[in-house]
Length: 400
Image 1 (tube, rainbow, N blue to C red):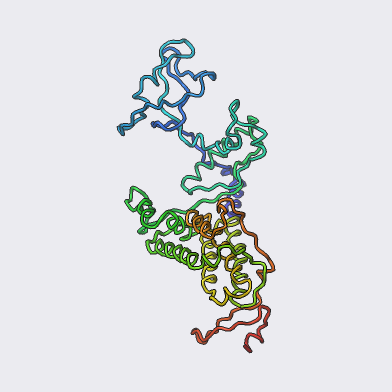
Image 2 (image 1 turned 90 degrees about the vertical axis):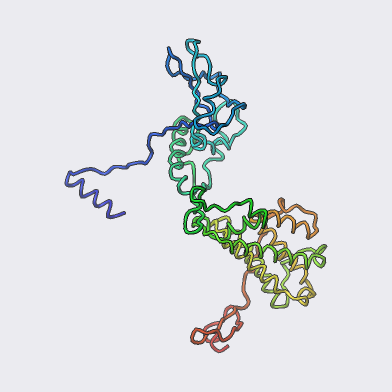
């Protein structure tokens, strides 16, 4: 970046040229030969030429009796009752435009319209757009986002200059998600390498398909499709289901509690893992969009939960802690696998709806580790594991 600036500076000193900013915004042909889209509100008259539809006749509405033949071109061009009209200027015969607008025309400003969807007397409600704009997070594929971002930014500045908006930039943050890769190529219909989601859903259910897609890669990276990965996601959900079924009778009617500090080491680790997982999943979702590591943390919580013995359950407060861990796991899974999570929540028998359940809080005190697990290796080979106090120094660890 520095070198580029110095090159321009040198060229200007030699009077060989000057620095300028070039934008990739090009003239934009917005017409599309298809039915679905906003009609372009103009008519064509032999005498008057191209004439805009008067304001009191807007909006021009799409007819609903269109026949789709697949022959190409706009189906509106085959509907005389739509395109045959009267010239607003001379009242003679005219032909209505049968092309519709590119959908980017609407998506370049509809985020502002979302702030006031019930406004029917003007394009935007300035008071509500001032409250809601700008958009906090923009998510889109890189191929789509680059061009659309330019259009949306251009529209926003025009609307600002016209007094409808009070921001210059429409979006605060941008996330461009990766593509799905299968057999070494971008998944697309033209390459015939598409995975049929209907078949996945019939075989595994929608939740498995969701869980694998979110777990396989962070959203900004390409996702390599793996049938084994889908199987793995399915097996994990089955493990959660079986654990709930196995302990359901013991846990129904017990109040969940993760505030009490238990005495057994297994339950102490379970309590710490509950609060660590809540913190990890919350941060990964809200701050980083790293759904894959959030799901991995929930899997770790389940592994810890699965290590609980019958004796741990019988310990005072043990069942309440296990209930807290299982409820936490289900609530945290809810955004990723809503169907199975809702069913499991109902099975725990508290009569509440998971969709209205409050997102759990974590305790900083519960995150403090009393001990650390140290793995001992000699010449690269595992020779043992030891547990030491969390604040142990090098000498104490070496001695142990």
